[in-house]
Image (tube, rainbow, N blue to C red; front, side, top):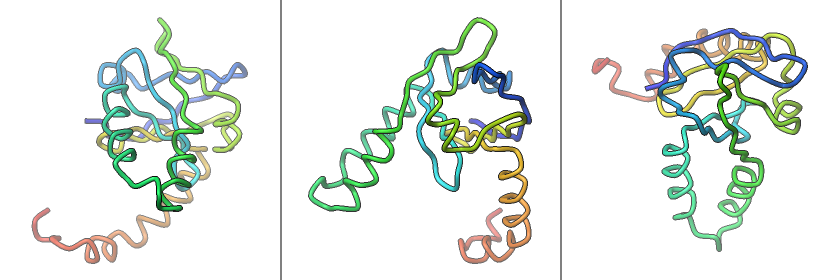
Length: 144
């Protein structure tokens, strides 16, 4: 399971060190895809296969399904973890997520997310301010 928040840097060659705890979970081949809320999604190859299968099950006859599949699959890129534990972020994903300098890598159970550090801090502050309301909406608060 991928959990935790890690602040790293992206270098001038678009390389990012993965958190040590994520390396064994993600493996040597990782799929990066355009994420939601301005993030880049990062999946292990096996998790990407599961996600791909679920997305493929959606009818291609529905316009929303076609659009979302184009968004995810069209922007996805397989990358390899180098011997130093780094991955290379493609320029188009780096630009989309506005990555430079410090970045945040967030574990979200079956995936990790790569964020611009400032965008993550702003997003996180907003969610923290409404966490109780969100939990209430999601129900089963007592189960936690």
